[in-house]
Length: 160
Image (cartoon, rainbow, N blue to C red; front, side):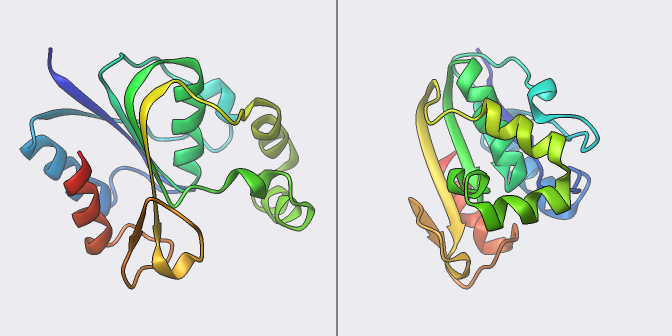
């Protein structure tokens, strides 16, 4: 059975951006079939959940990591890689939630709040943040903000 990795970009990004194309190359070089999943930002995330197989990897960046989590809530998978994920507490904190509503709209945010559970069905989870994001993670990428940098890609390459 071929190894498969799903790549979900962050807010208002597409997989056509260079960092995602570089990640695609890294994954292909490691023997993965790569499936890009661009988010339609005009739809609720819960409407964009897709099926995966038990041995698949789901990689999501930022709000794309939130969709990765939602997918892993519904389907068993081998590994979810949550890169610079908008943290769970963000959806409950009043100030942060207001900023998310201003950015994404109330329907989008309320859908995530309603659907996001604290548990998922992935066998393995890796949380990655840039060390300058001031979040806790399994891996902190040196000298990195909230962006998919070359340093970020090197860390992802180690874990897939």
